Amino acid sequence: MKPSMAIYLVSAPLVAVAARALMTPQYQDRADKLDTTRYLGALAEAGTRNDIGAMLGLLGAVLYVGAALALARIVRTRSARIGAALTIAGAFGLWTNSVFVLLVGRLAEEQDRQATVALLDRVNSAPVFAVFFLALIIGAVGSVVLAVALYRSRLVSRAAAVTAGVGGASLMITAPGPLLSFVLGGAVLALVGLTWVAASTTFPYDRSARGRAPAERRVS
Image (cartoon, rainbow, N blue to C red; front, side):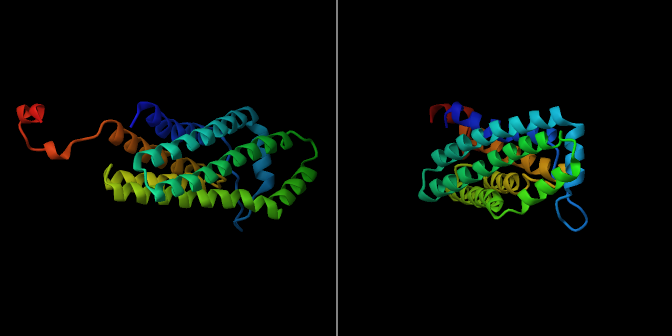
């Protein structure tokens, strides 16, 4: 694999890790519903940090499109292309989530907190809003499909393929929150898995040479 393609595999989850470390997660209450009041309060206290994280999230979503295409280029199978297409849909969900965070950051600056909470609750319950979460779920499925294609290709170790698949799916479904450790953990797992795949395909290890003398390897 070309080093330029490996850059996408490493930079996409790396930027996501930085973004999620800075962004404020969408807190939930004890009833597993969005705690809008707490969320807006946290955004108001850390507006600049959250905005930087959201902008990094936008960049990470774009880079994730490149990462999906790079994985499809590695495997070159029909299932890999399907997985890449689904993952790109998930990247749209990641991008939308970052835009949402930026917009809510502006709402958090409003003085009428009660009206702002009511508005945000209506937005979150709107049917059209579910499309964005559906995109993230589709992206998670795409990550799994790509991982299965990698697993079957044997171009990388099976452990690397599994880690990349679980990490990619976790990156998608944990995007909204509710816990920072939960949100950040998915991105870290994706970083480990995709970096592993990038290293394995950029600097492949010749298993057939294992156990042979150095002179024999040079001749072959």
